[in-house]
Each structure stands twice: as C-alpha cells, then as structure tokens.
Image (cartoon, rainbow, N blue to C red; front, side, top):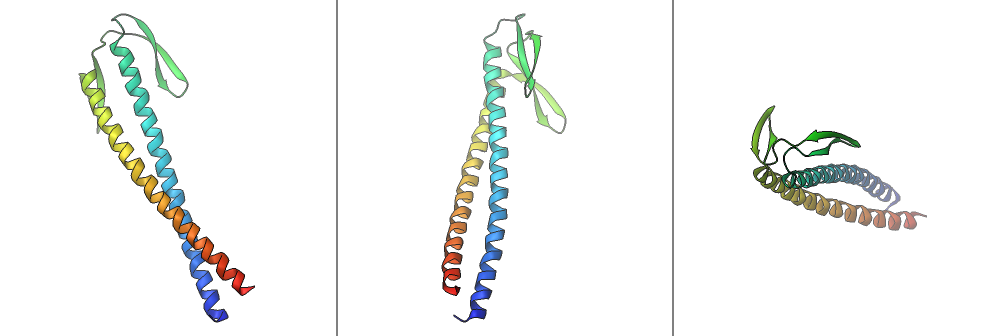
Length: 141
C-alpha cells in the first residue's frame, strides 16, 4: 500500500470512528433516558401498591418529584387519575393503572435491550476500527 493510499485509508477510518463515537454517545443518552423512565414508572407502581393498602383517611407522604414530598390524606384508595396524553386525564381503578404502567415498563425494557444491543455492536465496531488504525499507523512508522 502506497503512502497516499495509507493516508487515505487512515483518514476514512478516523471519519468512521468519529461517526461511530457520535452514534455511541447518542445511544448511551437514549439508554440513560429509558432507564430514568423505567425508574420513574417503578416508583409510581410502588407508590400505587402502598396506597391500595392504606385505609381511607390515613395521612401519608407522597413524592411530588425528586426529593420533594407532600402530606396527603387518602380519600380514595382504589382509584387514581391517569394522564393518557394530549392533556386528557381520566379516573381509573388503581389495578387498571398498574396494568397500564406494567405494560409501559415491559415496552421500555424491550427498548432498553434493543438499544443496549445496538450500543454493543457500535462499541465492537469502534474497537475493530481502533485496532485497524493502530495496525496501519504502526506500519507507517
């Protein structure tokens, strides 16, 4: 391989490596976002489970968000409000909401596995390109 061909090959590999690194970063962000959503759903499911077991009129602290809780009195421990999108909120039995959230959780976990698989493929390709680059660069020295 001539010096010019070697330089061209190294440049193409660097471009491909940069592209794959960008893809890997994007996939990692997507995986992290799915993990956060999964954690949020699990917290909601745990809270709903606890509410079902609390008698009406009992006061408990309910999470409003990260590190923020509010004291509430349970008036209805069998129904809750569910945001179904587009600003539409409906009253549903907690058992139906748990089923809905479990379905969402299952879908998110499937997506996480798919993203994780794709990320691993990209990382393997990065490793392969890096090995080829090292080999080419050692030849040029």
